[in-house]
Image (cartoon, rainbow, N blue to C red; front, side, top):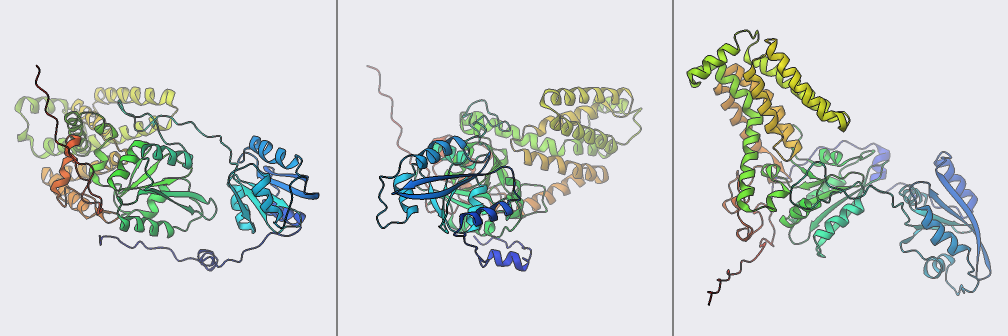
Length: 526
């Protein structure tokens, strides 16, 4: 695959370059506990949510002065009480030190917790402390222990609100990355499902993970994802949209070259096809690469119904996409330049409706489209209890009032309404936005050149789509370039027994999805 393109990266300043190369001087912990605590409090600005619980305990007759450090709200205080405080303050005099270090004895024979690691410098200490871990520091030792006791408070797993289905699983991702990875592993119980984690963001230090099935995913694509991740050098990552903009192939295009989803079953299906999932801590939206144009018209429910039903619904989505993109422009072109294409009775009716309208068809459509977009956006941003009511009532009232006032014709209101409804048929919200953006360009072409302008715009749009890439894969695959074997799940979906191989655009050594056994013949009745 030779389609990978190098993205320009901003030059790093000297301090950032030094940090990027791992050459920054590492500051070790102090031997005196008071000096270490003083530096921690000074660095945190004496923040009130920083907790320093100092205790003394004995082990093998030796008194130990210890500080238990954690951030209030990030660490689980009940676990600290049950598994650290009670354990250390209980009698440990019978435990013999031998020749081992005190910290080793604590890890192996005293502390009843699972994930324990050493900490010897301030960088690792602050990374662990601010991520919710508990730090144990001991007077007289220039090292400590980190214990993973992050708070378990999180949003419960619920149905994905943006990808509702009638038939299918109801589980949806949440903002916790570990919960999201576990939801995927429940779907794919295989040791070849590999997980790699990056820490991106100099200030936020956000955990970003990539998941793929080793042996199915193309290693070149996996390596390209790693390379693009490692090139990101920014202060913070707050949502997967940040990652999408940094690693996408094309910037100046209305069409998304990366798909996102809230559903674990969609991610599992993509992984089984050879794609790669990118998970970001703090958001329920998971990115899928490489992504193709055809995937934005596929829904998880397509694979839970029979093939004929899914194919019909998919055809309706394509029809809705073209209506959402070309509906107003076709109306403008025909009524302005090509009236001979309209039946006489309908032409007379349209002419009578437009008799008192002071604007041309293009301005008329532009007013209605902009008005509807404003109503749609206001309905999304308002509280749910009143957002839908305001958008529906506002559309009806404004449309009726505009027709009665003679500003727009009744036919134009119908065209705009059909166009708006058709845009909701597209499963992917970002693809729907692309159709809404291109709609205005086609309206201008139709008002200027009629159907000839619409045709030229379609040719330019197809050429643009064919020029796009998604991590080296042609965006219009398997239509352009045409791949006959992959047409089984493109415009229509054949039954599962016919989907024997994975998509050909995934250059994988393991292309066999299933092996078809000969069907059993029914036994004749006696």
